[in-house]
Image (cartoon, rainbow, N blue to C red; front, side, top):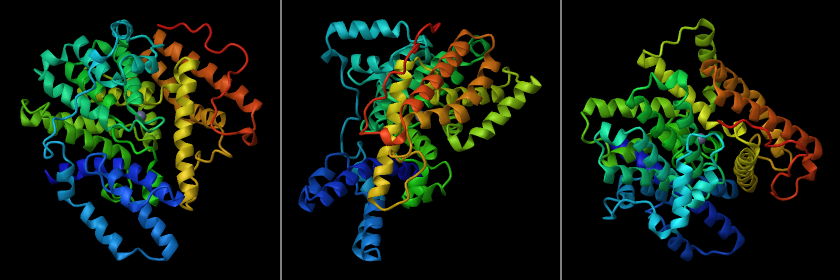
Length: 451
Ligand SMILES: [Zn+2]
C-alpha cells in the first residue's frame, strides 16, 4: 500500500512541478508575488511546489540550500500531503470525461464515422481529438474494448472502466506539446493496427489484447515533458526513487497501477490474476524505454534469424507485444507526411522547452534541446536513421507479407527524404522562432497505398 501511495504522490509531483516552473518564471519576471502563488497551487489537486528547481536556484544563488526550504520539502513529500491530494479523500467523484452530449450531432456523427475506419493507417488522430472534444483516448479505448468484447470477457464494470480511463486521460499533461493524451491515443490506434496483423492476430488471447491496449493507453501517463537526464540532474525525487533507471517508464507504470487500484477496475478478479496483469503491464511499459532499444532489437533480430518464434507460447507473444508497443510508440515517422510532420514539430518543441529551462537555470543544455543548433530536420533524420528504421525493418520481416508494414516503410523513406531536403534548405542559423516546417518541394504524401 505504501508503495502505491508513493506512486500517486509522484503523479502529483509532476503536475505541481510544471505549475511551479511557471511560478518560478513569473516570480523572476516580477509578474507574481508569493501571495498569489498560493492561489495557483490550489488549482490542481493538492499539488506541491517545484522542489527541485527551487533548491537548485537557491543553491546557485546563495551557495547552500536554505533549511526552511528543506523543511518545506520534507513536509510536502509526506503521505499526508498525498492524502489531501487524493480524489477519494477529498470526497470528489473521480473524473469522468467531458460528456459528448455537449457536441453537435454533426461532430458526433463524424467521430463515429472515423471510428468505423479506426484500423486504417492514415487515421487522423488530431481531427478525432477535436471531434471528441479532447476525449480521443477515452473514446477510442471504449470503442476498441467493444470491438474485442473485452468488457464482457473480463466482466468489467462500465462505471469503473470509465473512471479508470478518465483518470488516465486526465493525468496526461495537456500542456506538453508531445507527451499528452493525444500521443497516447495515437499509440493506441497504432497498436490496434499491429494487433490486427495476420501473423499475430490469430494467436492473441483476450488477455494479450487487453494488455496491449491498456499498456498503449497508459504508457506515458503523467509525463512531465522533460527527459530522464533532466530529472537526474535536477535531483527530482523520482530519479532517486527509481535509482536513475527507467525513471519515467517506472513512474508511468506505477501511476497506472495506482489508478487501476483506485478505480477498482480489476477488484473482482482473483488476486493472482490482477497481480499478473499489473506485472505484465509493467513489463510492456518498461520496454518503451528508448535506452533499452538495442537490447530489444538484438533479441528480435536473433529470433527472426533463427526463425524460432513460437506464438503458441505466452512468453513469445508477450515479447512480440513489447516490440509492437515499441513500434507504436515511435511510429510517427511512418505516418503520412501531413501527420508525421506535426508530430515531429511537437516533439522538437518539447525538447526546445526543456533546453529553455536548462538555459534559464544555468544547466548544460541536453542533446537535441538547443533550438539554435538542433534543427527539426536534423533531429528527425537522426531519429529515423538510428532508432526507427532499424526497428521497422525487423518488424517488416516479422509481419511479412504485410501491406501495412510496406506502407509504413514507404512513408518512412519518403518522410526521411523530405526532412533531408528541408535540412538542405535551412541551416540552423535560419531558425527563427518556432514556426512550422515548410512543405518540401515535390511529392510529399502522394501515392501512399493506405491499407
Ligand atoms: Zn510515448
